[in-house]
Image (cartoon, rainbow, N blue to C red; front, side, top):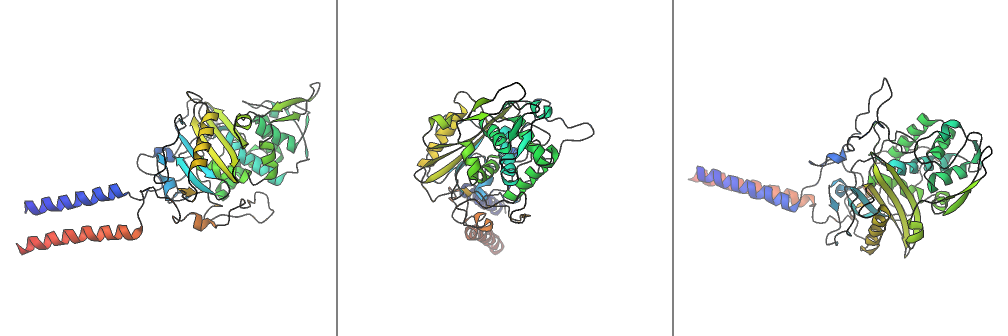
Length: 408
């Protein structure tokens, strides 16, 4: 009897070992992937809730990873046989995607939830571009001027068009510009609600906005995958593409202060061939975040980096190395896809505030983009039939051993 039990144990161990080696389909939040639930704890008081309120609970984790099964993996997510990513990439989470097809080419912890810092301004820019006339004149307020962090230089009584505010938003990451635009979108609270509604429609289910500017606030989170979704939408708006790639622009003064020139803080615009621009961000809790896009040979690639540091390799250089890596990877072997919309979207009517058009090249519907068909599994996922066959083989072996014992 001991021999049979030993053989049963051996069979079970072998079966479990085979399942481990061949790879099991990842759950939405794998064991050990705590970063897929919530960002790391804050190190300062920037996320302290207002008196009488509490910090929101973390967003729920979807049952299926948005963008395909491999998007739920921890660590590097690469096509099978792909070379290792370039040296010096120290950002905790990153993603490379093709803006046209929506293919995710490679990633690291794509659904890890981190704080987005000023890269969250992409959502504010999308709302403003879709809802506000670019020639509308906005009068600056003291509340705009008093915003913390980076500012373009809005002053009380100054007159600024929506286009100029968007320019300040992209070129110098003006928190004052974000506040002024939020005032035109119904106020800070209404704007944050619209940002979260937009994120939900896009399928950006790791994202919770707490401020229009990306300054840290209670419950703030996003992921490299989500920011890539928003960035792809930005690349479908000609106005935002133009402003994102502008190197310098005139900005109005106010009162006795004359107008002045603002320069784009994105370094790749001047150093990387084909660079289209992007967005950078930093807070003490978020650390460094960066988005960039570049075009080469008819392709436009997106790179997103989160929770990075400027040393030993600068964030701009990390973005450049990942773009080079993405352009060198073979096409047609995605590890996931940027969905066109949430699986069950509460879509707004065409032309209504917040309606999200599908980006150019998005000729595949959301359901098919969430399927595993066409994804490079990198040797980690098995077809359902193979799993069934493995289960039958284990059961058959167990049955044979039991029958043999009865015969004895």
